[in-house]
Image 1: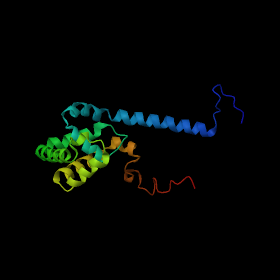
Image 2: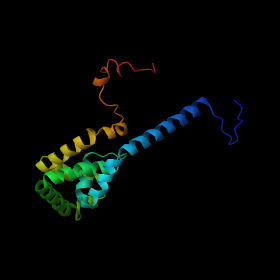
Image 3: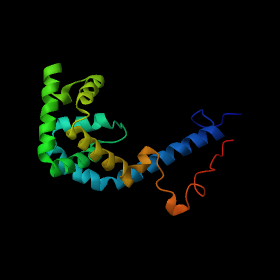
Image 4: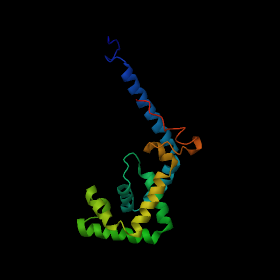
Length: 172
């Protein structure tokens, strides 16, 4: 194949598909980002009021590098609003244990393994269970976040998986 492009790279089929996929990813990400604007606006209001240890805990329970703090903050603030005493007491106990073992606040512990070890110590407490539950529904039941997780949504409304997705193997 003769290279006739000005930049010295021919636009092969493979390169075209790669660029097309990147464009689709960028457009998809911008659509998801624009749908997160209400969540982000809420988070801007809520984040300053949210304890840093609680946010760090949420990100450690369900770690997603693709997500910013906004979806976590919204879910955690709702929990804090509903059960302030449970969250306050549970977080104080977690912070006390973090200071006893590591000499610093939970959110200041650099090692993820050390933070997870602390969470394993409290995973049977009502505080941990309620926090995990609030995050689970706040993150994974949020339709605006579905594209970031690669989930297309429910197929029941579209005829079920037999009509949508079951036989989509086009690479055989």
